[in-house]
Image 1 (cartoon, one colour):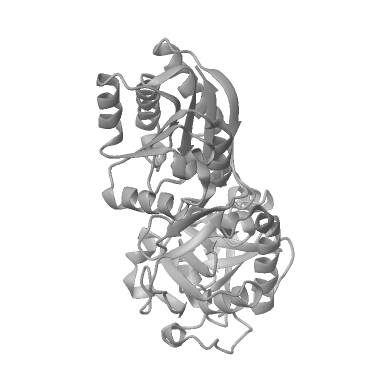
Image 2: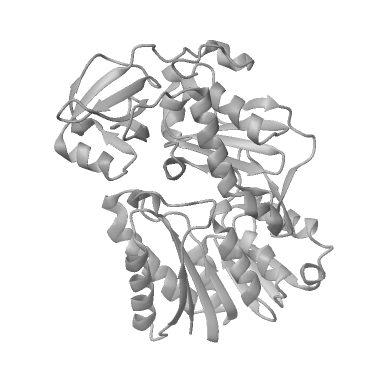
Length: 421
């Protein structure tokens, strides 16, 4: 819980978690750190701290002062990370308590209110830094909430966050997911674990949610991210509008999100490729959940459990071609050192995808790496197409959906290029 709010919400697991210290840490920072915070950046790095009043534990509140000892910001302190403080509020003094969390969470949830009218009850409620709660993700899947944390600094505040979010967005259950770096910090977890049920009970059957009128299953306990790639919702809907009468290839299909949308849009056939058999088993079940939709019931759906590049080579060897090719790989670059190899990987993927794309067809290719900006991604794809002597006509380059807003440069990670041969 936050300093200044000393009652403990009634969650059994929270009894083992220490409260943040009453005494706040005072930090003085260098000019570069001051400029970053004044510009709205949500991170204070260890290298920018010139003086610290006393040691602190993860989740303690740190008050940041400028060179003239004036209040600059307040945030969550994390001595285990090079991002030493994640900024919660800047500009003027502010109490960080249950009421503050309630206001922040309510504002974030209001921004997504319009999604309900689209037949959607699966979306991101809180998008970390971009909603003023750095390192904290909350996703909704119908009556299930999934909280994912990217820093142990959130653990002493987790009960307060849960209590407040449930007051605004009631749910039948809350599940905790931990980033890999958090999972490794066992000394600071106090009994918490990835996939842990924090509230409610899991149903006997699969958890289901809806997106633009389609039904999907989700595994928020073991699935990737929080169970589903919610950030591609708008791109899936765009594919739905492009698929009518077309043969569609979906590479890196995972649980078949793009595939099901293509089928619902009237695709003549859909081929889903993924190296994970459990993922494609989920795709098959998602198609079964939507058999009441005439287009889904009428179209063919083929599953290929195989590496993406091997699948594209095999399809080319068999002279199979498609009208719409979707390439939505995992992040090729997770740090700056990987950018060169990632761009080469995107180029190779583009050339392989174009080799099975018919003349007049559409390529849909996505990148989910904050290390590669949208302009560089687009130019890489278009240059690869020219090199393959299959030049593309750019249709549109899309970015983030309303539930994945961007509030600082590093927050932008998703780009999706639509281009015709």
